[in-house]
Image (cartoon, rainbow, N blue to C red; front, side):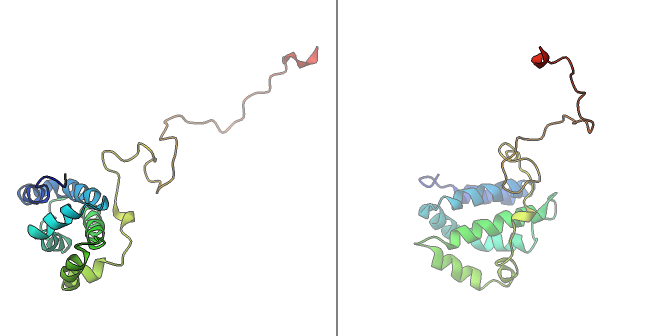
Length: 155
């Protein structure tokens, strides 16, 4: 993805389909977590950081079902971009000038991220980071099973 023009088209898609901003924000978060310097360079070229900061203000997220989760994905993406060795300083300069960033930068946002379509394969819903066996629909009885007196041990 870093070898192609990825960020600009994704941002254009977010602007034209505001209802998909949550999904696009999650994609951005995942891309920037891979520490691809070229993706951060693309983001700076197309002015993604100011656009994401505007979304953090709530502008453009009015139609979303869960704007808090989208904001959480945006914050995580911005934090990942700010850790870029080559471009992190430029990202941090933009973030430092933002009044909205100061309200979000120190908060823990994982609690706002609900299940996505891929969530739950390794962890059960509502379980933060613990591997589970999934969500079974089997209801266990609260009564122990009967004792079997016909065991083969008596002979």
